[in-house]
Image 1 (cartoon, rainbow, N blue to C red):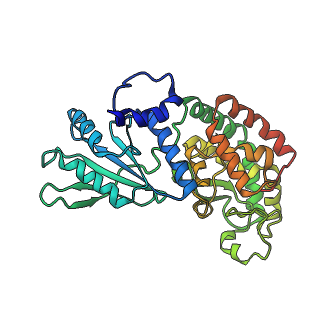
Image 2 (cartoon, rainbow, N blue to C red):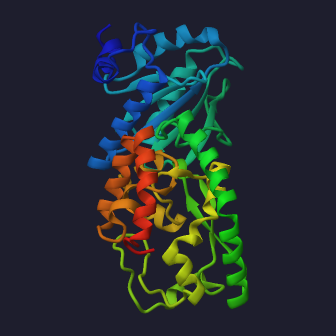
Image 3 (cartoon, helix red, strand yellow):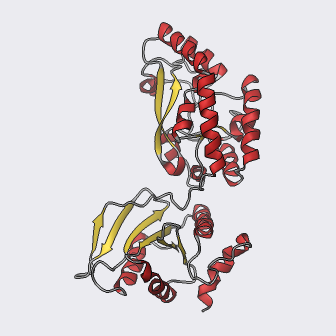
Length: 357
């Protein structure tokens, strides 16, 4: 059938070495991720919509029936694939949520009533944060609502290479041990000169938009966030990011810690925990990250890091859009040598005090 291979030809050129299971209707996970990223970029560019339908089969033997159903139900523009965990994924471009649930209902009706019917989960992009899971009822064909267990960012996040996590663990442990005396002295200086806690934490968005708390040495007066709206000086960075060269909330000790980047050292704990990586796009505060345009949020497809291209080459000297483009370029070209190079260039960049905090 011409449909069966039309979408495969669109993406297989990028995966010329692929041969396993090449006659199957469903794209394997690697190709499916690439197809999803292509559709996501198309949506970001033209302002359309993409619905993603996740299908969980009750039995492995139902796969052959599902493939026959999909061949007769999907459009030429739709892309079916399978994740490594066995779930089937349908990319439905230019399809609203209601249309995706109609596809789910049509597919489910082919199966006998009862527990053998597949479970479906719909994600709508760009509104990937709105998720519901529904299962077709075998009596009235109504759709019941239950909590979703599907990660909305599953298809849009790049798998973390083993070497990257290995370097993160070794590097963070080494730096935490080596810099412990420095952090101890900084903690004493903070406690002696400014009332309030030694550490400062803030909610930020990481891989796939997952929220976590980033840790820093406190460099501002206690309660600085509550005073942000009182600042008369504008941000020195355009776009959603708020950055100031001379923030009046910064304490004298805090200025030294920022100038030397000692305030960033507690983030090695975030790296060790897995919230961050040594190298990756800097995580933005949640409010700033969610204010980014859809194309800018593609930077969340890789783990956030302590340093990246922007920190090394252009911090504070480029527009917010250019900063985001540098992060996207990194996310498309993650490599062992690239990470090592950026890590090695970070120290000279700090010594030269490039950019602003």
